[in-house]
Amino acid sequence: MIPQTFIQDLLARVDIVDVVGKYVQLKKGGANFMGLCPFHNEKSPSFTVSPTKQFYHCFGCGAHGTSIGFLMEYSGMNFVDAVKDLAQNNGMIVPEDDRMLPALRAEVNAKSLALSEVMTKACEFYRQALRGAEPAVAYLKRRGLTGEIAARFGMGYAPDGWDSLRSVFPDYASPALVEAGLVIDKSDEDNSNRKRYDRFRERIMFPIRNTKGQVIGFGGRILDQGEPKYLNSPETPLFQKGYELYGLFEARQAIRDAGYVLVTEGYMDVVALAQLGFPQVVATLGTACTPTHVQKLLRQTDHVIFSFDGDKAGRRAARRALDACLPHVNDNKVIKFLFLPAEHDPDSYVRQFGTEAFEAQVQDAMPLSEFFIKEVVGDSDLTTAEGRARAQFDAKPLLQQMAASSLRLQMVRSLAQMTQTTPAEVESLFELVQPVARVKLAPPKNKRSAPVGLERQVMRILVAHPSLAGMLSAATLADAAKLAPDGAEMLMQLVEVAQLMGEQANFAALAENLRTTGSDYDQLIAEIAEQSETEFDVVKLELAGALRQISHQVLKKESEQLAASGLADPERAARYREIIQLQSAIRREAEAETAR
Image (cartoon, rainbow, N blue to C red; front, side, top):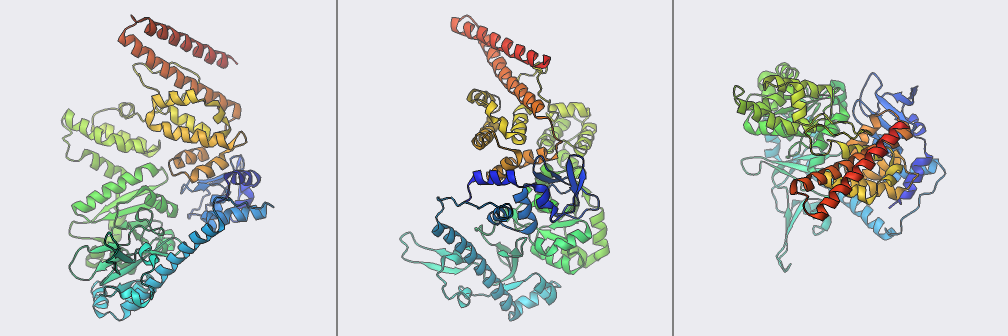
């Protein structure tokens, strides 16, 4: 494990313009450098590299990160290799953390390698088994698949036997087989009656590959009747269903060529459509579409079309995909939904009506904005106040997931028109307009809670300028927790990380540090990456004003509670007077700062 202090020093020494410039032709454009994004096809440059922030960001596909992140994304390096590469080129030696002993590191690496080897061997075994499995070959022929397409996707067959894998894994008792999800181990509580058997039996096998082409899991389809129709690998150290898409490795070039990706529900849809002239197809892995899926897709293309079966289950799947898409919707992204007749899936539709008919369906797919309106209206009666209110009630959490954009504005206008309100009323009711907290302390009339976005504004400033974390005291954090309990933990974690990094902390080093703590900060980091530079003194004043706002709102809330409960008690009255004095002091401080 590489110490975080070394990562911070490394990023302070490395120039990201030099790192990216080795792979991308960059041209000076204002304060930043511009070039064609290496992570998605584009004709006009939307890829920026900031020498001040030491950060890259693509306004097209959303890719962003530090020098370390660029090497990992572009070259396929892991984190350690990327750090070592940068260190070597800058005359630095990577230290090792004593907490992870060499023997333990070797054990972790050996386990990962063992699982990869197990999956590769199993894949080859299933492929070989398919050649001699007449029922499986006959099934695939009935589905119209050729040997060529089966070979392209590495399809195979799991024989009908409890321990067929024993022939390729003589050590059938190896824990790696269970950890890889290939073998099921059932034991009694006293471990006296152990029973092991193959997870996949008498099924067509679809190997699932990661973006590097490594087999990380399998999907198995039963030949005849039975449940479950499809059986997937369990969650393993190599495979998490919510993060992977079937066929993405095979479809990457086709997606770029076609200019869009088609997302379906099943393995067979992907393989069949690829054979019938639509190789730009991927599928979710027996689970609902997740925000991570959407992020991966938008890294490949700006145009995503979800194609679901026309039945009720397909509609439900489409709604879940809509929810996953909304946080990532942008004005330069196109997301659509294709709904086929209830009796068809993509495979059956193409075979019955032909590729041109299906292509027409793709072109006429429903835009996300239209699907959104249909979903929130549902069966509500818009001729009644109750029906219009219900539609707005259902729309509110969806619109709140979206970042401010022209598309969101258009959707707000459509909803307002249908529900007989104005766009301004919808935005106010849904709390979509977030007031910018500056030095001014006067809160909005008739609004008793803290301004929407105040705590988020503080976090945005700290992410951009972590050296300012020292301005936040324990008392200030306690006040922030009173106003926004749900976001307090995230703010406290950010302050703790930034303060530990010290006064020399910068945006790139903090972003790399936060990357390992989870995805909660990713949107904040992306927002900062898109912003133009602001003078440090101005930002410092803005943070001071926001912190005064927080203190002011907490004091205001307490004074209102005291006044409502009565001031007959001497202690309550004394505290009320103290609050009034504190509020006056805050106002004087703000006025003095404004005068400067």
